[in-house]
Image (cartoon, rainbow, N blue to C red; front, side, top):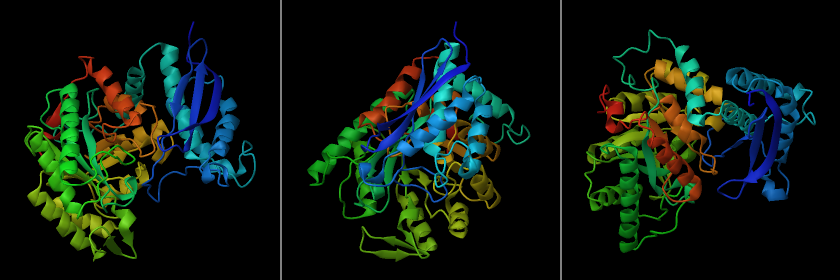
Length: 460
């Protein structure tokens, strides 16, 4: 007979999609199969993210995670005998251990800190183990956990007049935000802006949305090749990585690919941008190297983005300004917040304190949710709850260093988050998530709303 009582926790070092080590954890409940989770890793990381611990030294050029594995193995025994279904309790313990780690009796030496790659591995594997112990799908267990978090939200703030009124209330298939062209740290700095993405607003189902995405991606590769650019090789997240003449030229190619696929730009498919501007922000100036070392102030970047929104079917802009440029973000939100989705990634790093500050300062209107930025599943859900209370949209996201772990696909459906950002439809660490969504889409209880997730918003 299976139960959700934890019997064993094991951790090991495995490799991610860049060939870099990462942490895998297995948690086993009595009489059940192990629950297994692998921790992702980002290349474009925010300053305020939770610590990802690497070994240093010569092994794997310093990227090894044996220290994080040792930490997971060291703290694992204290969870043996606990109930894996009590996710919030376990995650609270992990969070306290993170705060106390330098003096923790589990530390192997005084110089080590407890990494988020150790805590997140345990946190996610516990969720898998609880699902195994109950003999239910992961998506069902995650929905049970989310209901507990969502019920704790401020009901007075979750009224039906909010732009996010469709979100969080029941499981449904997310709208994909999919990488077409890569730049920045995802493609060797070929472009300043990091991702040019599409959103299949007009599709009637998730399988149809995925077919549209693949069709556009294939057309884009042919168009790039015909124009004399690289239309085969891809970046970290599977998007094409051509060295174009300008940042704006990428937008023209994406619009042309949508039309070449027999779809209407703006009506059927919208464009999203991940500017990742913190990575070209230095000493108060935004420096665009791909187009001749332009040096811009925040107002210039806002003018640039507003001009693009005027000329192209752009619905979403992520990290349009740098993570500490609060004044610039306020101006950006005032100018474009009523026209497009403004996502904070490096700005908020899935952290409720950062998000609360953003809400108070009235910056952005959406938050990217990356579980490894905060270190526990509960921490990510808390950020989602605060986002919805504040009428901000949550967007579940993968990282550039990904694995075959498909947890975020189940998480996006289970929480009714509304949107998911996985990367492109090349490279199997991406397809693992898209394919899991295809499986979940077979459940008639998980509808696909497409553009309807914006129905109460001025963006619709």
